[in-house]
Length: 155
Image 1 (cartoon, rainbow, N blue to C red):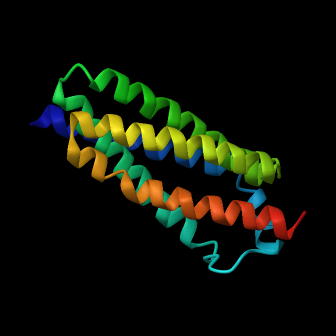
Image 2: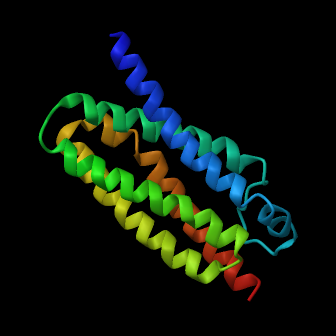
């Protein structure tokens, strides 16, 4: 049981760490974001770190659950998990740090496809792990709306 706690802790730490590093590297872009025109339903900037932290925690828990199943399908599921985590890392940098908002939108569509595939693969291994990823998928859909809206209103 202690080994499982360590695995869950490391898995969550990895996911939150990836998100935290990405946020740190793109932090200066948040000031510019506050000055941009934003589409309706745009939440205040303080909402983003809270939501993303929760989503990264859920990602880490789901990945640990998949790892612990010891099923052969877990390898592919975790590979896609790793790829989507890397793609996620670069979205904030593209959008906030580099200001490449249209490219960031298409990058986000790629991320959405990867997350959909990850959820499908997680579901083959652990239904609970897959369900834990649904808030992430829906938040990415909302983020795509915001991303496209910010690009459109500020082009």
